[in-house]
Image 1 (tube, protein in one colour):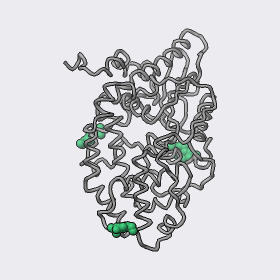
Image 2 (tube, helix red, strand yellow; image 1 turned 180 degrees about the horizontal axis):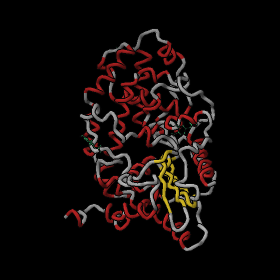
Image 3 (tube, helix red, strand yellow; image 1 turned 120 degrees about the vertical axis):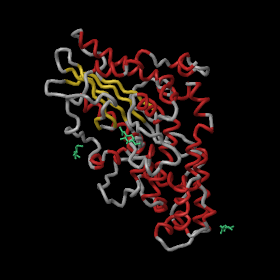
Image 4 (cartoon, rainbow, N blue to C red; image 1 turned 90 degrees about the vertical axis):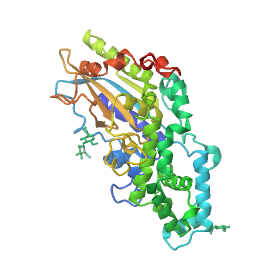
Length: 404
Ligand SMILES: *[C@@H]1O[C@H](CO)[C@@H](O)[C@H](O)[C@H]1NC(C)=O
Ligand SMILES: *[C@@H]1O[C@H](CO)[C@@H](O)[C@H](O)[C@H]1NC(C)=O
Ligand SMILES: *[C@@H]1O[C@H](CO)[C@@H](O)[C@H](O)[C@H]1NC(C)=O
């Protein structure tokens, strides 16, 4: 069963990403931070799929159903995110500053505070700067940065978004806004220090400390106690806002930077489909492509997933509380987009997308008696992209013909 092979692959990435073999009881477990479901791209895969906390190899057959009994999986394409990164130098500096404040200025008898003051050690060093925690790939693989690190190679994206501070102005405004100020004040209250002592960088560092200690060490860090649920939601929104403007719907070039990967995925599906249609065996049953959160989000955006009908901005935190663009759900560690091509006989080929083992529907392709659409309908839906979406054209700096 191809699904199980794929599950094995996901499992492999969970292991090398992290430290998840320690068994932790589901729900109200003291080992899991209460705010763990708000960790954005630093969240654990099991927070998205809680049933995996007990058995990481579990496959939920009730949600992985073929369109009908006569359908067979003939091809799987997986794009999976690997690696847990250490914090960046900027975050590590914020951690160090906050730690100093807790050591020298904070007061109180709470056990978590005493734990930081007496037992916790600052083990992050600036030379870790964003490095992967582990990267021991055990199977053969080919590196194709043009395909999987397209975000570095798309000149227009690099200049107009990645290296352009004003591209993230909504994020900066939110960081200085009333919701974030309240989070900082609550941290200061909990440490019993003046409000002026806690900066935004320290607040972010505290949130990362909680997330990293959990991802890297499977620990419910005492730093997590600096946030209540509301504070965690504000931190989550700040990060979603950043992803939205940097990798998501904020700018068209963000998603267009993934054009080459988009075509690559469809060319694999086309190949499998044409082999089946001409009565041959499928030559590649499973393809696995390994990338980063930065790889998956532009592609998900290009395909139209998780698009709210309102732009995320610095001022609509409250009204976007039920937004679908939520990176904690979309892009935890080991996040994966799986496309399953089914042969249902008589030329009836169907394509099912799953994100993190959950079926999702192609946006705009919801009129299906069967929930899994015909492959040709999927191609039809994306026909403009299939005909265009040329990486070279989209990523060059001067205006596109369509915009002149
Ligand atoms: C499988 O998925 C269904 C539907 O989402 C869910 O209700 C069920 O609890 C899941 N099974 C397990 C074992 O968690
Ligand atoms: C924090 O502690 C340091 C070191 O003891 C001290 O120099 C500084 O004045 C304190 N800051 C405040 C605002 O209390
Ligand atoms: C889009 O947003 C408006 C409110 O701004 C709402 O009334 C409408 O139902 C939304 N449409 C969808 C499809 O969610």
